[in-house]
Image 1 (cartoon, rainbow, N blue to C red):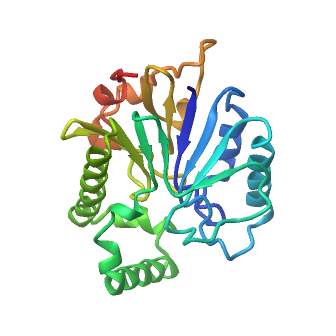
Image 2: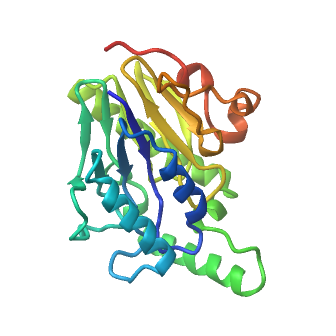
Length: 254
């Protein structure tokens, strides 16, 4: 079992790191599954620009030679593209009892109840950009509101862990919050793979014995197909990236 999990590409968004993801696809080993965990496309009813469409076409071609799974996120909003080769579309995906893979919007009980506030927040962000502020994804701007953002992350994390416990999974991985982290809650490992709209982007690498969360700029595989532990990330504190390497490098039972 060799699997790569990414989330929140947001193709079509001006903030999608298209070049980095294109390079990432080129390095993907042929014996690995690729799982895209939600919000692959930012606005599914809007035509992608040519460069982003080329990446989607590349993923389509990839699906003919290795397994590709597209897990639905809230931005897909029930609309899944057609004519995409052998890509497998799922609402949730599992790896035996080891890992539950789901975007995380189902575990978000705060934003759906705060639609007026969220709409006002987005409008305020757009106004900032129009007035000359540095253009960033709205999630990156939201991170400046640390207390509020922490509540959102904790909400998704705890509900995800509770779901994993109820269904007998050892671990659960989500996206949605745009915040990469790897921790253990109530005996369940919770991994969030962050987003490709803010740097650094992360990926989850799964082998028969290990699950490792690493930044994409450290994507290297040794001849045995195992991810090299990033020296850069080792030297980075959990406060910087929200990643706990002690959990990220811990072995899990088969």
